Length: 354
Image: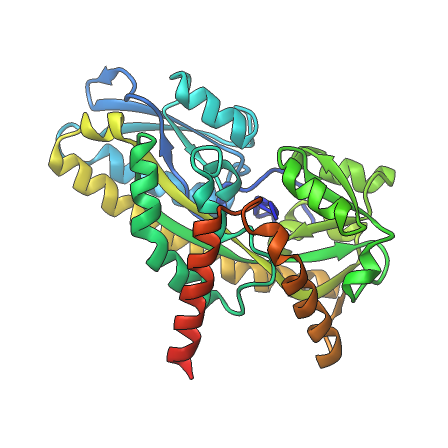
């Protein structure tokens, strides 16, 4: 399922952040478009767009990376960052990059899937992953294959990262999968396969853009939002959806890419410096994203959020539901070869843990 949301950070008491779809934010994603921008006295110029709100911890990590890029050998790269989705949705950013209007973008798996659908195996397999350690293991194992696929599409992978688990926030208490069937649930408008699958399962999906999430909640257009705790706090969703079920629905994953055309135009020593800076940024984004999820959850509970933890019998219902939809996810939302490889790698990992 495409449940990619953008994480954003605001301290208590500040105005609500307009919901945006976390690039990775979540995680780190940097995609540099076909060709670098014009050369300046300092070197190449790159314009990077992101849905991340200005001055969040993720934006700060990008700015640190930008400074490192500026100082890179070979003249460096001048990075200009456009925050708050001013360049459109992730799909818009990918289109802009392909025609050269942008040179870079920070995006999630939802945006990456616009380049190659194989990446869906890292996120669009609900209830498959049992821990974030499993998420990292699969990402590392699938990395070379995904890198090859991105290379074939003209992109070079720089780094991956995740920002923790997506949970369900609802206006009314809802603990079991069946409890959500009567509720209107947000679904990203750019994922028709997700919408159709939900309808087949008897749910009520409402396709919207991420920027319309809070308005949809306030007007009653939707009653449930899949979100990370951090984004639910930053976007002020929790003020309307005062219940959260603590089920690890799917991880929020992203990565950093640069077009081969842009990458190949750089000197080897410049490439090495940019790659190292991107890896540092990805590690920082992942660490901060996970930590801020926990902090956000605690803050929302103090302000009235009710967290519903799952009893063993209800947990079993969720696991059974996940198993029941696997045949519909396989080959439709996630390519068959990738779906099967994720399952094989999970069996391998779990056998090693035992």
